Image 1: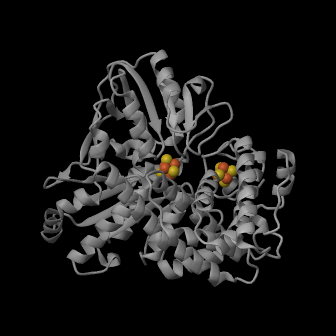
Image 2: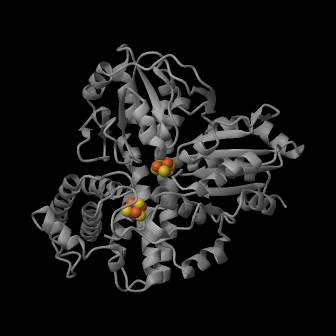
Length: 531
Ligand code: SF4
Ligand code: SF4
């Protein structure tokens, strides 16, 4: 195996013995094989045009290979088989056979055979030139991240033909030996553009279904009673669970990236959605062991479950871990029954934090915000967001938020917010200094806020008193970065470390064109930004 797609890549270069995330070599190689199959499928999908079965499968296949989603070899082998069936179907529909090795792909019948083939399909086989390979990796990780957002949008009934055509075009392009470095750079930039559409689609899917988020206090303590903890990003799954638990005496808590769910009118109306439990994904082993009720993951980031809670843990959607019970479809009875037979949580009220500052809420008080900037009460905005992770270097983000001057406002999103969202930041003339915009896909909302401010001040986004400090962990952060670059946003600070898959030449390109820089220390970066 060799995998370097996330920030945990072993020794800062890549996992080649066992994944730091818990991915074993068999799963890693099967995922490489699945990606190869998706490229084969894309070669034919590009010839048959839009086909909902193929497009839906492409999204699920890509999302399954995102960090911390699918750890089950049997499940990935099943996806490889299905991929081959669809590829053959597309080949028949197209009525041609494309003369190349990728198009001729046929997986072995058994898992061992698939693994043996997969050893030849790893990321290092994608190109012999390391810079081109680096940009192909950026593109592939961008596609994976975008597929995650598209999956949530599709679950809520939304899709987009142009975006799906791009998925197939970009996957097929990675097999084309005639393409050069700048071809892949343009595809990566186009990926950022398409992802803006996908994040907008998902934003609309959420707001059409549940209304625009409104500022909402969220209880961090516990309420006496039976309980289910929901971790992940999928709001539709949470809604269905809320419906099925209504009146059953079960309280529902959010974990990790589900926290922003509390801000949506269509979800907060359920009185048994009682609070947020725990913090970001990397603390799950400790937090789940202490949570006596049932727990369900609806997307990443799952880690190796401990014996102390594996019998209370469920997966849904594309998440899979061998030995963890998977809920297929929308009947959550096994989770509900497990919650009812498990011990209750105690009455233990805690602190309240605020969420629900999507663009509709923030722009609803735009006059106040603009006036505060004009009269000097707000001197600067920081967007401090992205993924959280286990490395100690991530304390930077806590320090950065703590040390940001009192006349600055911090917009935050994704699970990186757990580094500082329980601290008191106060307000500036009634505007909270910390505004939780939402999940990582709500980068869309943060972009809308930035664009509206730029319009109000008649300047470009790069001329605003706004600095972006991102924390990355996995492939959704990669595609958000591509979107920001597509929008021409410069001077982004990125940490806690730079991706292992970016070569020095590609980094130089990013620095020269976008002035991207690594984080240093909170003091030095604040001083450099604020002068
Ligand atoms: S996803 Fe990250 S931690 Fe897991 S194997 Fe790949 S690089 Fe390593
Ligand atoms: S923001 Fe990233 S790291 Fe955090 S839970 Fe979501 S996918 Fe995982």
